[in-house]
Image 1 (cartoon, rainbow, N blue to C red):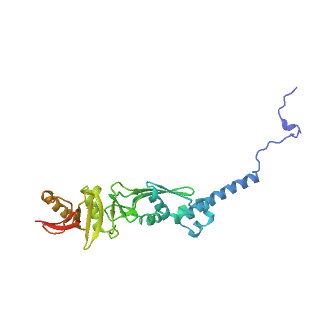
Image 2 (cartoon, rainbow, N blue to C red):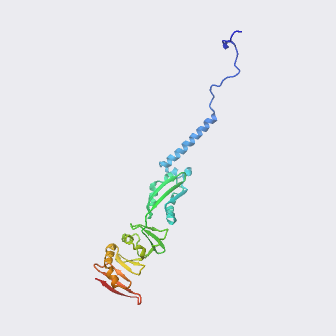
Image 3 (cartoon, rainbow, N blue to C red):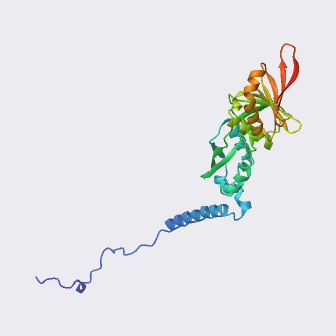
Length: 273
């Protein structure tokens, strides 16, 4: 039997065909197209809102997945936290990419107890602020409210009451430069813990009453010099004044002492030359 060298010599048609290439599925192509369109749409929304393009669109319901729902506040608590949240409440419902650091700064800078803050967006619908509060040097009570004082011209409603809290009358301007300076000087001289009441007197003077029963009158901007004068005369005062009194330190080169006679509730004056 001779070998089969040439299959083409035989007129045999194959019973099957190899598939060399197949036509792509129309359904699969449509699915890919839909995914690409969705990706493009999301990217366009983020771009528009982030770069401020079509601002009216950024506040519309189309961008609701990125609308602000929650404001997280760290670093403070109590009343102060609520003050911050209330100041930012107008941003609720807005697109978080449309809320800028300048928008936050504009609100936060108006709050007296804030020294600084960090701001970040938490996708898809939250923002977080970490607040650094100013350091309070004392707490005062004015009327039925408590306020923290920083000695630099700022005051704010206090959420906590210090054990060294003292009262000031309604005549005292809490933000006044002289009052704030007086608070700093009381702190430096460790007198704020012994303070009981501060009242304002014309012209530009304060009467500071202490827990030991003594009171002192200062010019608002002369505490340092006038308190030094009192300390220089303290030995003479202790030797010659056996009761409590009101020490008027506003006089040059002398101290006017109004002695309080508790028995008769009368007053007399002595002068320290």
